[in-house]
Amino acid sequence: MNDQLITQDGWLLPVVSEDSVAFWEGTRAHKLLIQTCANCEAMRFPPRPMCPKCRSLDCKWVESCGTGTIWSFVIAHPPLLDAYAKVSPYNVIVVALDDDRLIRLVGNLVDSPGATLGSLSPGKVEIGARVKVSFDRLNDEFTLPRWTLI
Ligand SMILES: [Zn+2]
Image 1 (cartoon, protein in one colour):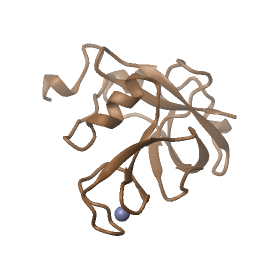
Image 2 (cartoon, protein in one colour; image 1 turned 60 degrees about the vertical axis):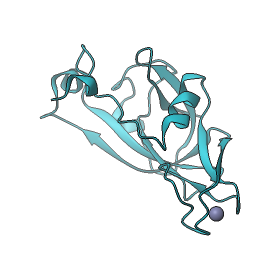
Image 3 (cartoon, helix red, strand yellow; image 1 turned 135 degrees about the vertical axis):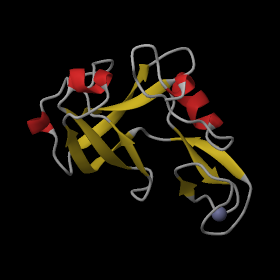
Image 4 (cartoon, helix red, strand yellow; image 1 turned 180 degrees about the vertical axis):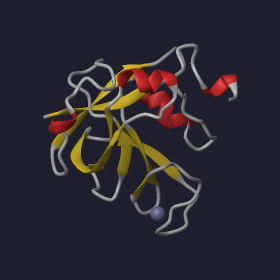
């Protein structure tokens, strides 16, 4: 595996594209920024060059209110990469943001801000549960948005 995509501890790192740089700058500043069309105001995620509604190439970044609802989830069990196997079982959730329920982010629900994957009992994860974003610093370059129950 490419060493630039994995930490020394074995955690996978996000792949950053030209379109997603601002998103990751936002998370480093503990802001959940969502790419928004500068022409028609439609939010879009993941970041990409063109608005799917009006085809404008002009965009801006709008800070999300940071709350949403669990739209779907899975509980991960081994076989997994070693770092992930050590904290399994853990959840992977899809959050529909309150800003626009069609904006859905994949992440993890944790017991409290800064808590590790697997810190929340799998039985506490439910579709429809209300969540808010928190930020978990992975290294100098990446801070991951994670989620806690409201
Ligand atoms: Zn648009």
